[in-house]
Length: 213
Image 1 (cartoon, one colour):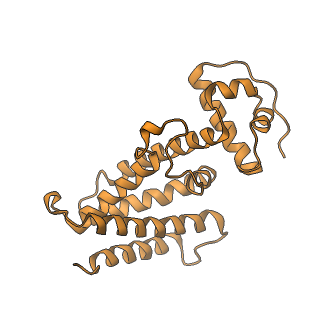
Image 2 (spheres, rainbow, N blue to C red):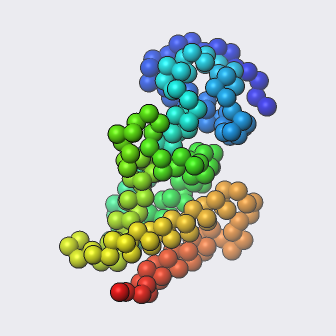
């Protein structure tokens, strides 16, 4: 257990906001989200309770901010990855690999973000932004990649439900592999690249062979 931190000097608004998020990530991962209180967060981070409440009215709001930050980073990573892809199949492969690499690069942030009941929830206190949660935005990007694979011509993408269903299946598959890789020592025994290639082949083959109405 980490000892209580010394009180930190007051920083600029955005700097203090980021300090709180960074401290919360550490405390949530060390003690568990459910067992963390705002007071414990203050004690462990060296940031006063009063200062924390200036920026966040609850620990749910802090977790939502961590999630928002993670999805922003994930979206940037997937956009970079697909930028040079030549066709929809390459784009989907690049997107899924970027997701896996994101989980491996920041296991603690990944666990907090993708294993939270708040993953697709709007930010607390912002009901006007319902439907614009960063998790939904990230998923929409994946749906678009799958839709392009189903029908490369944008005007002919009439199977929106198909794209949504298969995007969910693709996400479930890559999320499962990512979680196993960061949590199970020496997994996969067959090698990460081999397992990833098999997963992508399975997903793309399934999309290609899906029954059409």
